[in-house]
Length: 261
Image (cartoon, rainbow, N blue to C red; front, side, top):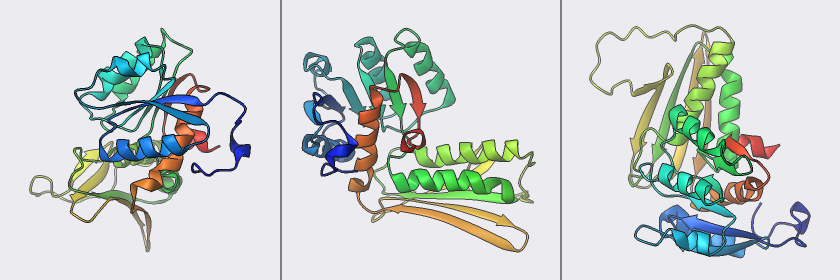
C-alpha cells in the first residue's frame, strides 16, 4: 500500500489521521514524513527531532506518533506519549521482553491506547520471519546472518532478534533439543551472538541497506530464506499500515504480522 492506494482500503469520508513523527530528520524519519504527507487519509502535524520541544506533538493534536529515534530514548518517548493519550508506532530497535512488559504496565492505566512495536516494516521481511518460524521444526540446525549499512547503531538488528525468538519458540513447541555444535575452542565473537540458542552473525558494510539470511540444515539438505531491502521506501507501506491500525488496536502489538491478516 502506498499514498496512491485505492480509496477502498480506507474511508476518505473520515477525518485524516493526525500524525507526529519523532526522529523526523533521520534517514527513516525523513522518509516517513514524506510518505505520511502524501497519504490521502493522513495529516502530518508535527516533525520533532533531537533538541526540539516534545510538547509540539501534543500541542499539534497528534493522534498517532511514529518513533524512529534511538534505543536509549525510545522508552521515554513511549511513556510520554501514553501519558499524553497518544497512540504510538515504534520502528526503533532495542526492545526486549522486559521493555515489552514495561509498556504493558503503562498501558494498563490507558487501555484505550495502542502501541505497535515493529522490528521490521518490510512486508517481505515479515513473511521471511513467518516462513522461518514455520521451517524451524523440520531442521536440526539454524543460524541467522544479518547485514546492514555501517550507520546502524545496534547489533544484532531488531529483525534478527525477533526472528531468533520466533525460531526458538517453534523449536521448543516441537520439543527439539539443542542444535549440534562441537565447537570447543573459539575466538570471541567467532560464532556470533546467541539468542535463545540461535546464533546470529552481524555484518556492517558500506553499500548494504538491510538484508537477512536464515540458514537451515538437516541430514542431506539445507534451506536458505533471504530477504533484501534496497531502499527505505520498501518500509513505507508497512509504516502506513501500522499508523492506520494504531487507533483501533488497544494494548501492545509486536510485529507487523498481526496486521497483515
